[in-house]
Image (tube, rainbow, N blue to C red; front, side, top):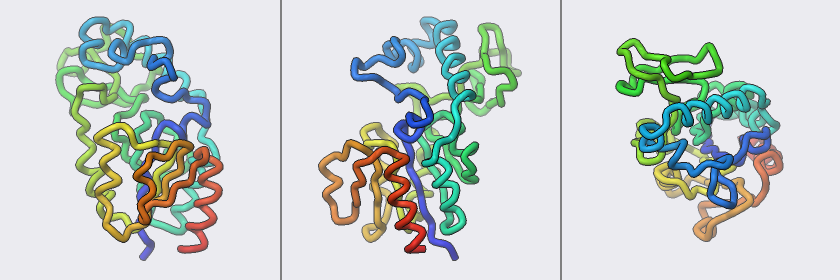
Length: 230
C-alpha cells in the first residue's frame, strides 16, 4: 500500500507558469477591485464586465503551460497515492499529469447556470457571452467560487486531508479561509511540509517543516526527500 500524500496548492505554483496571482500589492486584480469581478454583487451590477474579465483570464490559462512543480507532483504518483486539493481555477495540474485533482474554488474552463449550481458545462469556446443560457434559461456564469459564496468542495477536501499520511502545501501562505483551515484536519503525527516564500509564525510547530522557496525550487528539494522516504 502506498502512503497517502495530500497536496494543497495555491497561486504560487501557477505564478511560475505566468498566471498572475490573485491580487497585486495594491489590492487590485489586474486593475479591478475584486468586488467588481469576483463577487455576487459585482455579477448583479455588471455581468458583461465579469464575463469579459474571466474570458481574458481563460485565454491566459489556455496559453500557459504546466511548470516543473506541476510535473514533479505528477511524478510522485509513482511513489505515493497522491491527491491534490487546489485553490487554483486553472487546469495546469491535470495537464501536468496529475490524476486526482479537487478544485476548491471552481474551474475557469467550465461554466454553470446562474440559478442552479449543479448545472455545470465544459466550455468548448473560450468565451461566455451575455445571452449564453443554461438549459433552464438563465445566463451562464463562470464556474468559480466568488467572495461571499459557499465553498461546496471544502467538506470533501477536509475528508481527503484527514486521511493524509503526509501533507504537502505548495504556493500558498494559508491566509485564505476556509482553505487555510485544512491544515488542521491532519493527524497530530502527520508531517506537514510548506513550500512558500512567506512562512507565518505558526510554522514553528515541530509538525511543520517550512521550505521558504518558490514552488519549483521547493519541489526539487521535497521531491528528492519524499522519493527517498517512500
